[in-house]
Length: 415
Image 1 (cartoon, rainbow, N blue to C red):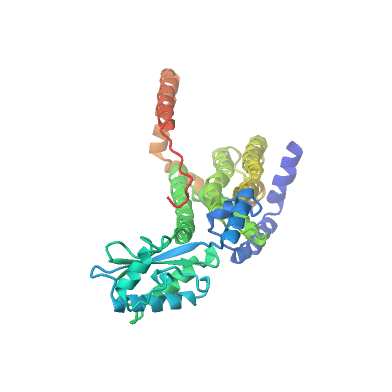
Image 2 (image 1 turned 120 degrees about the vertical axis):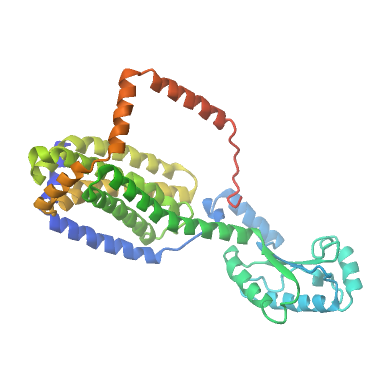
């Protein structure tokens, strides 16, 4: 272990420029692959394509000719059983049937009853006498119509709904009444899209929050910049490799940055905080880094291994997106370790020694009083009244058990 530590760490100490340039080149290569990522928001893909449940479901659909559907509702408080509204709706059905992504001629509406749209009474009677249409395409109070639109593919839901909205905004159909589009494919697509938007917003926010907290705690900008660099680079490498190896960006894999960022930052925080604590003793970057890595290399390596193995174990699950999530998060954890061992010492070696000493002097003057005071108080409680800590933990455990008993499982992703 000591030989590996010296070999790895001293490479960063002896060739800092090469390490930094190599890191930037690798980052550019992997980051460029993110543009090739394919986004998949379908919850059905949580199961593999050859899973018995999916195979049976698809075979039944093929046997009975069913398809994923979206529904268009038309509400008019004055009544929909008029020649004008029925005629326009019939024309709308024809246009929807010809829309890309819709099963040709598959729209289900009052027109399927076969009665002429010019005769409202005949339409209502024909629908009432059809057990498949009664109560489904015309509301009992005569104020609502429903169109059921089968899709050639679930992925067409958003495009088809957009095309229908464009039709409804034309002057020909704008006075039908209030219109509503709904359906499970739309709900799933909306859920997936919102998840990706939230990850795109929350990941930078999480990074910003970590940055602020670290600066408040350590009051040393160099620690924050180096640690954040390790976290950001590991996330960029992981997502770039995921896209470059052809795996689609699923709802699960979109959460990798949120999980990885706080994990990836830990090792570099240990190294850098210890470095700044020991630097006044050695007053030399190289000597300080060697002493720090000599003590911390083994524990950091072991914690990284246990974390990576824990995430890698998700590869044993029968859910493909969870497997991808686990393996690539483990890769990100390993990347953060490698960056901590090579990039961090190279980063420190490229700092100006004089500015480093000045920064250390300023940070010692500006140490967080709140943090130090809080830690001193906690130390006092733990040493003078040790029985308090177990009692508090027992109370919290009891409260947790009560909460666990109230857990309700909901496996519907769109609820």
